[in-house]
Image 1 (tube, rainbow, N blue to C red):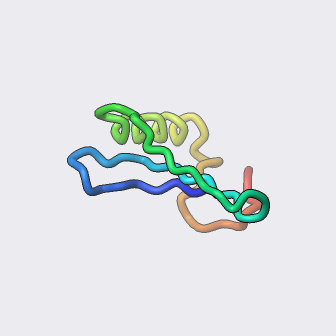
Image 2 (cartoon, rainbow, N blue to C red; image 1 turned 120 degrees about the horizontal axis):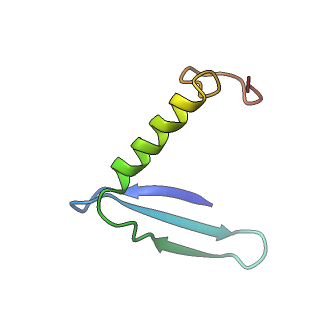
Image 3 (cartoon, helix red, strand yellow; image 1 turned 90 degrees about the vertical axis):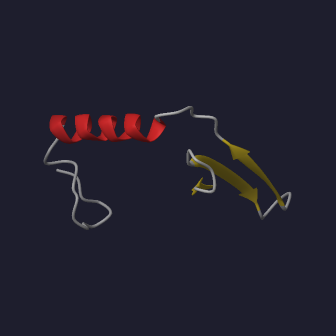
Length: 68
């Protein structure tokens, strides 16, 4: 599964691609209609998480298993 942001439009659009290389050798690509303001909403939610758990949300690189 891959998630990417298509920035060719006035509002960036997230696209999810799911590929089954092993069995069916097929893939599906879905543009998500998240509406206007979705980036700002995600930033607000991220800030709420950082305020609620400041030590757990690590901005610097840490090992994969790091969680306080």
